Image (cartoon, rainbow, N blue to C red; front, side, top):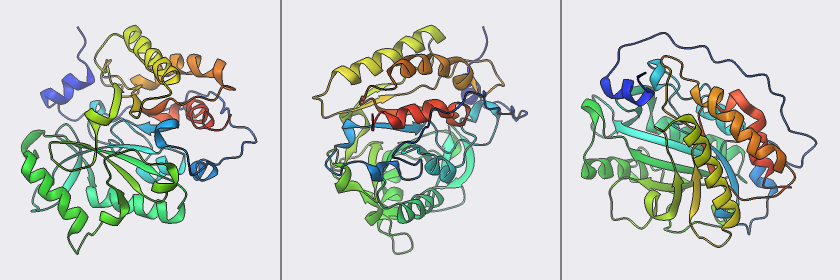
Length: 304
C-alpha cells in the first residue's frame, strides 16, 4: 500500500525534492465580467450574507515549502488574495525560541512564516481593497515539539489581538454569527478551530463541513458533489458550507494530487452549471493555480 501525504507528515519524513508544479493548460472561463479577481466582493450587494456566497479558498494556505508531502500551495498568501481567494486555512504551533509568537505549520513542518506576517499581509490587502472580506480559520495544529495546549494557544492568540506591539483586534470580525457582506467589508472574519469559551464563530458549530481527505479518489469525488448539491438545495441554513477538494491520497512525493486527480471532476460538475447562480459556500483547494478556470467558475457563481 502506498503511503499517503498525511502518513509521511505523521512519520516525520526527511527532506525530499520538491515536485515541479505545472499548470494543466486549461483556458480560463473569465469573460467580460463585472468583477475582477482582486476586488470581486466589492461588486456584490452589501446586504448579502456571507453564507449566501460561493467563496474560493485554500487548504493549508501557507504550506508553500518543506518536504513534498507538506506542500499544498504554489502561490504565496498575497498572490492568493490578488487572485480571488477569500478563505484562508491557517494552522499554528508555537514559534520556537519565542515567548508569545506562533508560526505557520503543516503538522510539525514550519512554513517559514510567522502569524504576524499573515496578519500584516491581510491588513495590507484589505487596506488596498476595502470592499473585500477574508474568512480565516484558525486551527491549533498541536504537532511536534512546538505544540501548544489550549490555554497557551489562547494566551498567544490574544497577544496578537491586544498587545500594543501587535494590536490586530480591529482587523477582525469576532461576533458569533455570520455577517452580511457590508458588515464585514475590510475585515477578517474569525472562524475558530481551537478550544475556547469565547463568543466567536466556531468551526464545528457554525459550518457544515466535507473534509474527507483520506478516502479513495472516487469516494472523494462523490463527497464533493454531494456537498455541492447539499449547499445548492439548502437555502435556509445559517451555517456555512465548507467543501474541501483536497486529498491526502498519494503518490508520494508528488504534492499536486488534488489538481491532477480531483480537479477534473470538480470542473465536470461546475462547467455545465456555469450560467446557474448558486451558493456553494467555501471551497478550499490545493494548488488553485493549476486550474484557474475552476477558480473563475466559483467566483462567477456569485454574479450569474
